[in-house]
Image 1 (cartoon, rainbow, N blue to C red):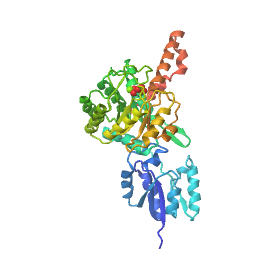
Image 2: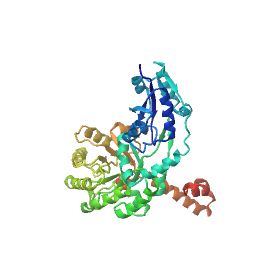
Image 3: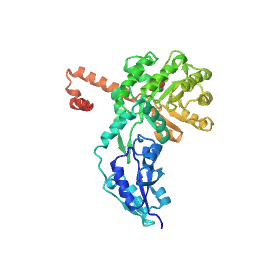
Length: 433
Ligand code: SPV
Ligand code: MG
């Protein structure tokens, strides 16, 4: 006799009684095949789950109600349904009421082709899930867990979005902000510890006058209250002899990647118009730094990103490409090709040429001067990581200055009240729980 097949799509961010309830009901109808959403499928509509696919598969495969687990690679179930042709499809009834209405209609239409039936058990409102998730997130933010998250994001998302953070409050904005747009929750994937904004916050120029211990102390403040990955701007990495200690400190803090630029001498910010006196390192010496990081990192998931400054110092495409080849062969995990042009055309030309290389590695963009570029065009051109490197500080400074100015001009504070967050809200912004 032909087996009766029941298809159950699940994400299983973490396993809870709601899943067990659905699977127990599904099992009553026949043999249960779970379509387990891949990291990539999940990252299209929410944050990637805490556990990776392999671990989630292991959990689900071993549940007594489950006969088989197959990867569900898209949010659209039709591919798997057409292949498996299940007699039943089981899904919690919550999707009738939210943005998954269309997906539901498509499932009903697809099942009709072989008279399959949709079963919708009442969704178990898991009141404790928020608390469980919070607890798990705390675990995920343990340094050893946080370090790996950037690598997973890079392999599951079309583009990873990083935003500059210069203190705990900006870290919390990046951690918590979610914008609902076109059926998706948009959010930043992590934080950028920028030498420019970190220095500016402390009233110092961006010329490495802020030493690494001070930079690490600021980032530790952010790490205390967040769980998302952090990418560290290490300028030129400093002395090669000190690099392994820097890497040890960064890994201990839970940093996921270091970006190191190929410049030497007194540092000047790359966006300065006048780059006279700026010297680029010789590729041969710079690769020694890359190799030193690779050999001193404890986790293979801690990424080293080589930043090429050829366009900044006025050298051309050929120099940039040559360096990309050499840095990639030395063990860099990605290349940041920096530019201070108003358009992305030079970095796109670079990307097109580098794509053909056998040593191709993912590309990183910092669209500060060419801010008009859309993420979709970065994706098209092969960029995997975008760093919005300074926008939060640039937003805060004029807002604070305007308020200070108005108080001076009016001789009182009433006029600024409507421009600023109410006292009640600022008191309640950070809860003590
Ligand atoms: C930073 O944010 O400090 C950077 C990027 O390194 S840039 O300012 O463009 O050099
Ligand atoms: Mg910098």
